[in-house]
Image (cartoon, rainbow, N blue to C red; front, side):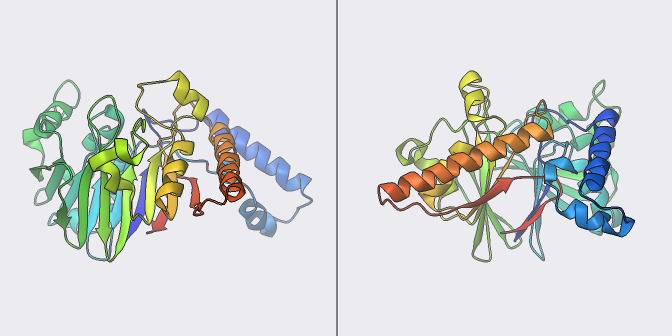
Length: 324
């Protein structure tokens, strides 16, 4: 099982401006020359040594995650990252008008819906688009999104057939060789994370959560979302100080995810839902702060001789493909 991140920003798309792109190119050229390089053949070697935030950055599209195996595919959320994913699918069965797509929703805030009207498979006759959510108002959401004056093409004029599926909380479902189970997250509006299992591997999607429930007791029936997990994607829109300033905004800091991952023995974590107001440089700085926090937690555990499993983790970037 693998995942691909098609959108890692939260709240609204945040592309680089032309001025920012120009400034980044200028700094790269200056750095190339300052390092003593002169030959064009050395460009690739120079760039490979640069930090991610100094080059492509973390991306600007809003949440969309592709979960897939050799035979099955599930898409989580329809943020603006769904648009380029739709173009890629044009090369497969969906582009030929005979395909099926499975699209699962965590919740219905705009940043998780904005890509829907621009997902090309919706407009191709013969396609079947299965959409899933715990929330019962899923059909109403689609009627609103595909409706004037918000979008010129009404729902009834779409070429594809849309099939709605209501999910039961904490009940397993299966699409092909992928099993997925919804668990509730901590968000101002009802929001559901998902635990995906296939081939003995497990991926947990825990994005758009303030993580107000941290202890095993408080998590209660939703604790399994964080147990026996190989890979977790977790909300990190804010720094720890910002979470204190923005109580009830529905988002967390990476430090909270690290605490859970270390306690539950999660092997790897990717942090996403980066704030649209945060520059790539600010996100990189938050990653450094999180690294310092993580290292201190390891040292504290060693000092009192308590078990503290190491966790492989990083801040997610648009376009990443990760094997679970």
